[in-house]
Image 1: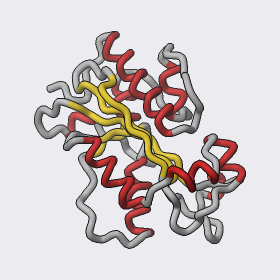
Image 2: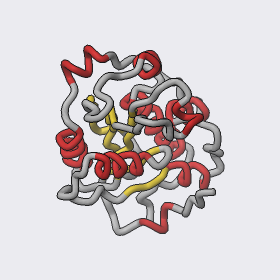
Image 3: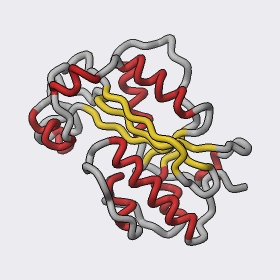
Length: 204
């Protein structure tokens, strides 16, 4: 069982912005049930979606969206296409290599911490190892937002990133399991919490 430490434990001084991100990665029917342990299945990143927020009120300042071409399983499964709405044709037209996508994402975060509703940073690290990218700089400081919600009496268990905003009364818009739409939903849920008096991740 993962112990979610209070986010204040990780704080390292004032940071003006925080980036909330979400990932979509290769999947097949029953991948989740098998934990991606069947032969040839890997969690290769296909989309990074993110929003950069004001670090106090969590208002959205900018958005980021990039499609990523998997190196090993280059052809997306029909299951993945149906789940995310990302087609093979669109990926071939718009996708970039993971190294480039990660560099763009780091630049978008602009030196501030990155956050996700769950340990999405582990998937990024897994892709770095999978592709043998040993020369990359370390990822920015990471927060698992489930701890932030739990510390403020919102139980995140059993919820996906696309569902946490709706659980707080913020209607979901877009396509569930689209990384940008999911990241936006998490951010709007955070903004709603702060508007109700919850302290920010970056509060002293």
